[in-house]
Image (cartoon, rainbow, N blue to C red; front, side, top):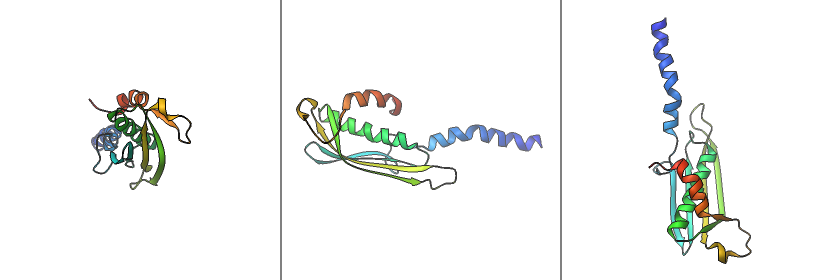
Length: 138
């Protein structure tokens, strides 16, 4: 009986690591990850998709990180989310929670020239500095 239980115990010990490896990564995009599409001057559509092994908070952080990345690449210091579509669907496999999709339309801006606006202004550099060490592999 012990011989039968040993392989099961070993498999159970490695299961959390295996499932963590299945979670979405910031860099990937074939099925999940992030992308940005330029819509016009200073306007982008940013999409972040997390599979059912990815915590919805992580998928949201991927979206914000990609927003910060494109903003800084445009040499702007802030962005505003002018349109947001957030979807969460139950996981496809038993025991999984949700697959998340964050679809943002953003406007890159210079904070000094923003003034009064109906949209929240995010500091791109501060977001990048806070989230990139957590999600980007070096």
